[in-house]
Each structure stands twice: as structure tokens, then as C-alpha cells.
Image (tube, rainbow, N blue to C red; front, side, top):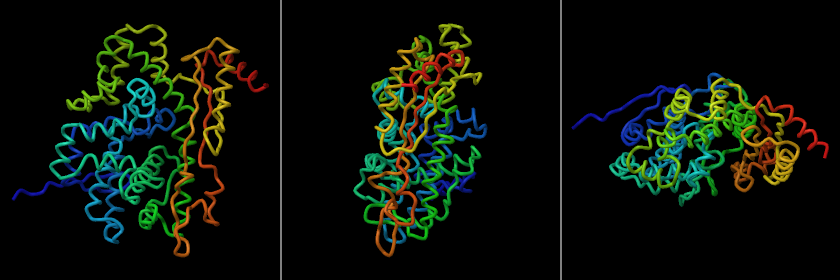
Length: 419
């Protein structure tokens, strides 16, 4: 009988991660290896130089936490032993459909193809030939993996473990991103949370003695979105890159190369033919350099690309960040600002860009439960917790402009604010 192959990978967050069997086979596929070439935090290195880690290491870490929690929940009788492997696979593959430069390009990719990152992930899991073969050889249903990632498993515990408020994805990326950026207030008491996670009626819960660790998790999430994920400079370069990419698609040589990755049909064909692994940060960044070197781009596009590579991009002339109870709290103000900028100036995109987004810090309809006095209570309803007093969203409203148009944009902004 042949010896079972085992690989150990040393992770900066979790130490040694053991890969064997199904997990090892999935990690060896070209689609998963592609994640080595997709950065976790695009353009965060323009502010935090150490933030160059990848979705490969994050995915391994997420699977490691899923295995740790899953095995303990199975031993304690909360979930079936067979569910542990399903949870591990879903955790490992949860990011496999992310675009190069991730959140920088995903809104544009969705506009072009109509496909969200979740839908691309589902397509890769169910249609990539290598992944389908590995899952089939190990008796794992790709449909069950996809359903779990969408939170549609029959088990509320499994759903919340993989795609809930306190899921294994967030338990890995918060401390990992804090480690690589050096942002101290993004750190969480991971060991305590993982050690005390249990199963409740509506999903994952924690006992009251882990309440402080759970609160710290939510506060860390709030701070990381403000300080890292939606840092005004980082977001500005993501928007600039999105504009550069959109213009590059019109360039004949570049557009032909990226043609697969612009439509639902193209993605389906690329995935089924096993070519999805070619769509990574290196390919896209290389095409930017190629187009510049050929000197075939319109001057305006070449200027944008030069600004991106030289770190001389957008300036935020308005930066409003607030806690809010709903998207409506900021949407109407954003529309008023958009109209004002168009009325008071002749500036249009990409000279000026309006950015609006709302991020959920906790799910107001289904926050994590806490066991208090033998009873399961939402954390927002626990008397001693501060979470119920904090709005569930962070709202961002920004106006960006290229440096030479900063004064014009500021004058338009002053007129808007006076009214």
C-alpha cells in the first residue's frame, strides 16, 4: 500500500498547517495555486508596506480554523463527523473566485459580466475540471459546498460557521491583516473565541465568559474597515486602478488577452477549459506595463497608469465616515453631492470620482448569540454588552479628484456645504 502524502506549511498566524488527502489535493490544483498570485489587500501596501500577503495564505488559515472548530464541535456532538470535511472544503475554497486585485476590480467585473465574486466562486467549484475531479474522487458534492458558502445548508450551525457574523473567514482575515499592516487594534483573542465556540438554536454561539472576546472581535472589525479596508488613500488607488483597467480593455492587444474575463460566457468557457488560473495579479499588472511600454495608449490613459505606478493618484477632498443604521442615512446626501459637483464644475470621471459604500459590522437581524444563564440571547440584547448601542453599519462618503483639479473640486464642495 502506498504511503499517504502529507505536507506541512508554516503559517505566520497559526504555525504549522497539515495538508493531506482531500485538502492537499485541492491545494495542488491550478485554480487554488492561482491564489498565491492574488494579494489579499490590493494597494494597501501603498499605505502599509508589509500588506503584501495573499489569498492563498488566508484560505489555508481559514481552513485550519474550520478544521479546529469543526472537529471539536463534532466531538461534542454538535455536528456530524461527515460535516467536518464539508466545512473544511468550503472554508478552503471560499475565495477561489476572487478577481485579480480583488475589490479594486470586482465592481467593474460585475458590471461587465453580471457575475459577483460569489457566483464566480460557485462556477469554479462546480465547473473547474481539476477541482471537480478532486471533489468527485473524495465523494464530496460540489453543490453542497456551494450551498454552504451561500448560507443555504440545512444546518444553521454550518451556515453560521462558514458564512455568518462570526465565521471562520473573518476569524482568519482580521488577525492576519492586522499582523501584516501592523494595525494593533485589528487583533482579536482568536484562541479564546475558537476555544469557546458552541452550537445554538440559530447557529454559532459563545458562552458569556467569552463575551469580551466577542465584543473585541466586532470592535476590531469596525476599526479595520476604517483604518485599512476603506482607508481613504487605499480606496483612492483602488478606484484609480479600476479606471485604468476599464480603459485598458479598449486597447486591442490587452482587450484580446483579457477577453475571456469580461463576460459570463467568457468566464464559463475559461473555467471549463481550465484556464481560470491565468487570471491573476501578475497577468493584469503585466498588461499595464506592457501597454505603457508599447506607447499605444491614449495620452489620458497613459497618464492615469503612470499616476498609479508612481503613487500620485487621487486626493480625497471630502471624507465623511460615520456609524449609521442604514444605507439610506447617506445615500440621499451622496446623490446631492453628485449633482452639485456636476453643476458647479465641468469635471467628470476620471478627473473626479464619488465614492459611496456602507459596510455591515454586525448583522442587525441575526447577530451572534451569547449563552447567559443557560439561555441563548443575541449579543445586541445582552445588558452588559456595548454592541447593541452601536449602529450596525459604517457609511463612507468621499469625493476624490486628481491633484491638479483639487482646488476646483474644493470650491464646488464649499458651495455644496453652504447649501
